[in-house]
Amino acid sequence: MAIKHIPQAFTANRKLIGWSLVPPFMVLLLAVLINVFRGITIGYLTRDPNAIGGNTYYAGFISQLGIFFWAGTAAICWFTYWLLKQTKTASGNLVFIACAGALTLLLGFDDVFQLHEGFFPYIGVSENVVLASYLVVMMCFLIRFQHVILRSNYVLFGIALSFFALSMVVDVFSLFAPIRHLLEDGFKLFGIVTWSAYFAEICWIELSGVKAS
Image (cartoon, rainbow, N blue to C red; front, side):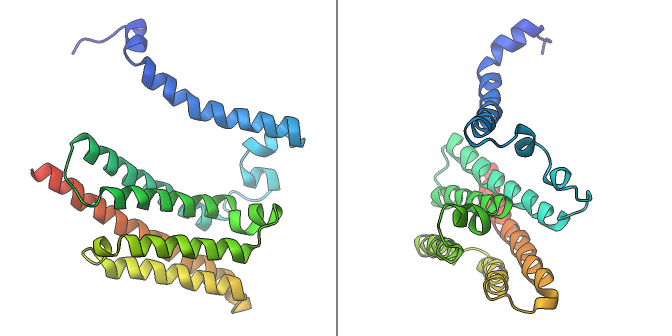
């Protein structure tokens, strides 16, 4: 394959280049608007939280690790969905995988930006109401896709949900005060990793079927 000159390479890939620039531009535009209308400095929105708070580099490192698993799982699900759509594979799990990616992103956003602890209470929505809403969404997901889940490694999925439930119970009722954070965040980490492993296996099985065919 001949090496393309820069103008040719740019022309051939202008759509991808353009779409790659849109998300960061929109995020930075949002930061500017928040600065203008809310008076919050740009640096407060763009810099690392530990740098803003004057914390050490290792502050919250376990929580930060969880972010990688949330983002990775959502990416795996949606990339698998896209590949299956591109290959026009007749899979009954397509909607399940897409919804799993969306649910993972929702939970990840809540974890990263502390939506149920900070944002929603700030706008007047109780933390308990938000947590109850998440439970309703999860129940709808489980009921809608129960036939898929029961044909999969549902034990691993059940373990993930159990860890999330334990973390939520410790958080809501402030149990075991001396080791509360160890239990709450530890259970959550176990939940995130097992959740990631479950959906990674689902996607691997689906993609292996495409490769075999």
